[in-house]
Length: 395
Image (cartoon, rainbow, N blue to C red; front, side, top):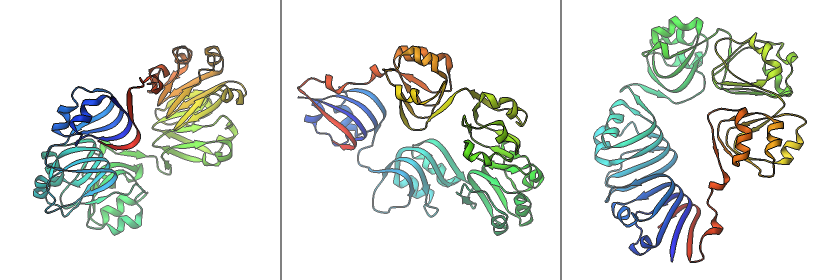
């Protein structure tokens, strides 16, 4: 009997038997496939489809498999380890470069690594591939992992310290001056600093000041802002957004009365009727995405059905930040007549006719796919065994 393995997040085939390997016909829809050198040879005849990663783990080494945040520490007597980390790998400050070279046998980190410069260099020497960001903290510096703004109280407590910023950090007003007064130094990170503190930042920041972002004095710094008429009180003063702005269709021009200035580093998805009022307040370049009608937002997974369209009175604008499936029951003519915008920042699954109807109003960097491309399990012959639909499978 032939075997098909499908829909598995992690498939550990390192110890697959010769008998089972001979039965495996296809491996498909797998996020991570682990193989030993022996297993790679036994499964060479299997057809791989939609396998995100296939990794051959060296024989005779252990596997450190972690999702999320984990710490790499010295482990005397446990032998060498092959790393597979999806998330954040922190290297224990007590772990020496010599211990890293002796105990790590390569691997992959999908995310970020935090360690001293000498630790980071040793990790790369072992063959570890980092798909993301490597924070090589200068030896003798302390890491600041918090993403919260740095306050005056914190700045005063850092007198005489050398601090490496591991992420985007806003320095509250007066913080660079307090750091300079205490003899502190900063490096790394993506620094946001108020314009009035620029000179003091130059005294403490051991990096490229042109890579820092200088915020207008008095502006409130936010990441993303999604506002409806009910929450329009947030539109006041000077706003600096490091992410995206979304204004719902019920926001009116009178709701902008308290908004003085606006800067948006990401895109601004806003009603077309508000463009003149927003342009009068905007500073710098903004990626404007004006829309008409009722805004329907999908951040995860959603099906666009005839009922969805019927609930909206008039035109519809779609924002897709996840997986959006267009129901085949919706006629392409209805899509052309009702949908004024598709901001596709994810995956839109639709028939060829539906795609043709939507493409003229589509913006964004997402993708289209045809539902006919999906594998139909019912089509498998009766003499085929299917293994899968599980998070982790060990053969």
